[in-house]
Length: 199
Image 1 (tube, one colour):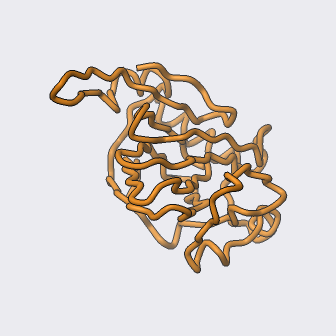
Image 2 (spheres, one colour; image 1 turned 135 degrees about the horizontal axis):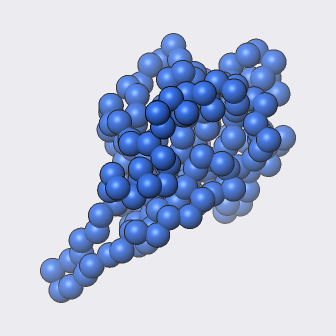
Image 3 (tube, rainbow, N blue to C red; image 1 turned 90 degrees about the vertical axis):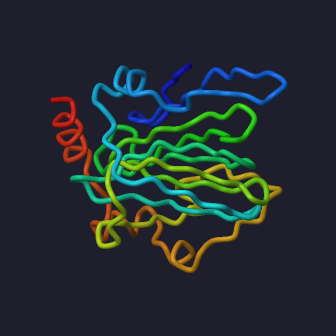
């Protein structure tokens, strides 16, 4: 497995080795050893999610309060999505920075995003199926959104795909509004929490 850091500290892209023959293929899309070697701590699985999306569905940007936050290890097992990670940790040297990776059923990459980072993806094909491993269960009271089309973020969504947002995501605040309302985690809190995970 090849692992490279994304432009947002605390996020990585993992590209697995695929072993194929006339029967199909096999790959390891997550291993505890490679994850721990990269992040410095184990991944404690609390919940696994699957979403299936039509072309153009845009989900996110979502983030959870820290502590404990919700780290995610994400892959796309059918179709293709543009997966985006955004630094929403107020006070971070890279606050507001984003990076993107195409997750698809060809290269079968995965993305890990640590606590305090925002996550969104745009489905590029009908039936795009995204699988998430989550470090904490979903807790609505701790979840917050930032509008994925906020011009201040300037995320480069594909121009040839018309985004379709849920009512909740369409009503999400801009980055500046989320900061003003105190909805986002702090850099200090996320650093302290990740340090605890590393022991």
